Image (tube, rainbow, N blue to C red; front, side):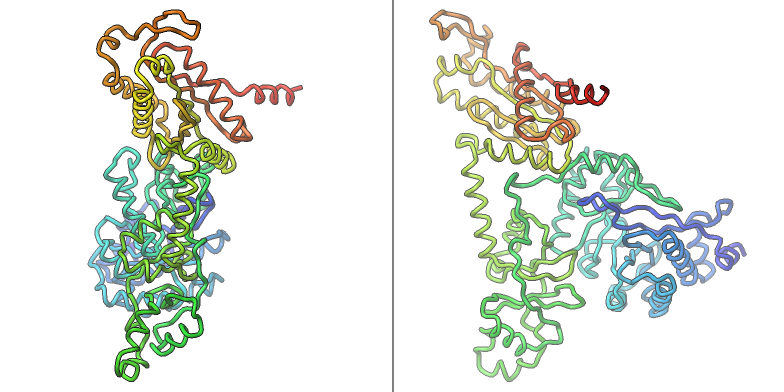
Length: 587
């Protein structure tokens, strides 16, 4: 039988596909894939495993495949983690052999169990949740990590996620393909990211095949990516040159430019409880740490609950509670579903999670983790203080009419993008013929025009990617990182033209303007206000500071104002200093 020959002689080929850390732009690990002989009907892994099922050799086939992958991975001396596919039914029905054999393979290849992530795949009858959960406890105790594969496809449901609490969750490629053009997929993945932040899991976007898809999943805060654009499965894997350039030219969005604060700022280093600790032990720990409002209950390094100081004391103040419950596990009075966030979570996002979780979270606080492992706790009071400070800072530097960020946040955000090596476009937006409009219609109507401009610009930018600021008066500034920035500029110009007509006298609209005195006292014809946008392409290699970017954008805006009507001018020439530098190097 061909299957027996393939397995006995290890006629298998290992392919490794890179998994990219989207924050650092470095390799996080590889997924190990297997192929049968190229000239065989069992070349496909699905065909190979289906044949093994029919022959009653599924366990042996999966273990031989894993042993082959581990051996090749070790010989290549690759860094990071190795993701291995293992079916839950094999794990549950044949426990403990798969675990014992896996640990022996790792030992023989000098790999630590913390380097291995078990991907739970399902291509047949699913395993029972209870038995699988019990088995996974043993895998975690051995130091192995767990991932759910293909979320949204078959077995890997949200229910499984909540039951098994994996370290990683892989989003099925269906939801990543074309996500930059599908608002439903975008909202779906955004919701998954919020669940992941709350549960302590890390998301891996599968099937990233274009630069636009990579940029968007990165902007959503998803930690890792995998797909052909990042790197194809290969015997000797590596990242594509395209993805390295894309990571360099893109940057994470920041909810409050210039004032970015993460949950780590709220960290209170606190001792933790284990499920084996009693209620009396928890009470003693509170007595020894009078400043703590809560204690986390931690198992295998991961938080499973939160004990509130005042809730526990309230229980113990009742008659006979200490005698009846003092020696019972501290899990008795804990909140089994506390808010758990990663230390890198922006406080703006954290505040939304706290509000969504409910009023009790303000008293209980939340647990802060690092890649799912317990770090400490945070309090609702500290969060409220930080949010208030950010709001005060934002109000201080916001335009009072439009409430958009002013000069300081604009300059800070430009500098942050330059320092991060991000590729972006700077757009200076300015109204034409605005002063005579104010003279004819009054400043109240002028303010309405400015507000209309701000609304048109807000609708025209890509939320979460582009940044809009109000310099003052009728001057606005946009920092574009969306790929379709030019089309957006033209759409917002058309939108402003259509909507602004409602603010003008119908006679003036019909005539295209009005007569009024200029500064020299002469009666002249003035066209209706129009919007001009000047755009420059900004790269760290061309600009060193926000001053240089602002100056270049202002120059492009002047060129746009020379064009009649609502106009867009894109400066496609390189900065003069760049040309001079090339000339100096050539000389």
